[in-house]
Length: 153
Length: 153
DNA sequence: CCTCTATTGAGAACGAGTCTCAGTTGCATG
DNA sequence: CATGCAACTGAGACTCGTTCTCAATAGAGG
Image (cartoon, rainbow over all chains, first blue to last red; front, side, top):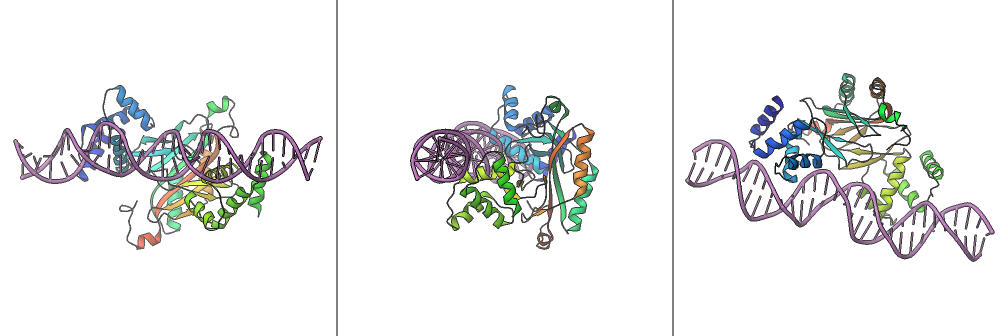
C-alpha cells in the first residue's frame, strides 16, 4: 500500500509520529473508498470499537491534506459548509462532477482543464499551485426521476 | 443600472418586495466593486449609518444568488469556510484566480473551460447547470516578496 | 529506564450562516 | 384614506462543522 508509505514518509519528514490513531483513521478512510464526511468516519470507527476523538480525526485529516493525500469537496456552489473528504493521488487536481439532485460526486480528469489553468496563470505571471473545478449538473438517474435544473437544489 | 433592474424583476416575479433595506444593501455591494465579506459589508453600512441586520444581509445575499447576480468564492482549497461574495453578470460561471500569498481574487474567463464542462457532462449523460473553477497560484507581487509555492498558505 | 516532545481525548470555544418571533412595512383593495 | 394581510425586518438565540485548550499519555532516542 503505497499511499500509507507516502503518509509515513510525510510524517517522518516533519518529525511527526506514526501513531495507532493515525493508522486506524487512515485505514478507515482507505476502507471507505468513497468520499466521506467526518460524522460518517466517526460512526464507522465507533462501530468497530476503535476509540478516537473528533479532534484527532480533524488533526489527521489536516495532515493528510498537507501531505497531498486528501482533498475536500464542497458540494454546493453557494453553501460551502457541507464538506466531504476524499483520498486522492499525488497530483494536486480537484475536479469533481456533482449531481445537484442526489449529491453524487464523480471524479473527473481532463487534461484540457490543467492546460487551461497553466495558460491562464502563465499569461498573468502567476506561479500555478493547484486548481479545483466543480461541475454542477443533473445525473441521468435524477433526470429520469423528473428533476430538472430549475427545481433542484 | 441594469443589474438593479434585473434584481427588481426577479423580486417581482416571485411576488417579493423591493424594500429600502434590499436597495441599500444592493447599492453598497455595487459601490464595493470588489469581492466582499459580510463583516465588511456590515461595517460599510454602519459607517454610513444605514441600519440593517446580519439576518437581512444574508437573506438579501441569498436572493441575489438565486437571481444569478451574486456568487460566492471560497478562498482555500482545503477550508471552505472563509467566503467572499461578488457580483457577476447573468452567465453562471464562477472562475477565479486566487493568490495563495495575499488572497487577491481575479476573475477569469476562458471559453475552453466552459467547453470542457459541456463535453464532460454530455459524455456522461448529465445536464449541465453551472461550474466553479478556482485556480490557486502565486501572483507576481508575492513572488517578488520571496514567497514560494511551498512556504505560502 | 528516562526524558523530551508529540499526541491524545473531552469538552469548551469559535464563527459563518440560519432560525425565531414579535413588531413593522408595502401594497392592493374597498 | 382606512383596512387587511402577507412579506419583511431586527435582535439575538441557535446550529453545526471545525478548532482550541489543557491535563494526561505515549513514542523514540539516549
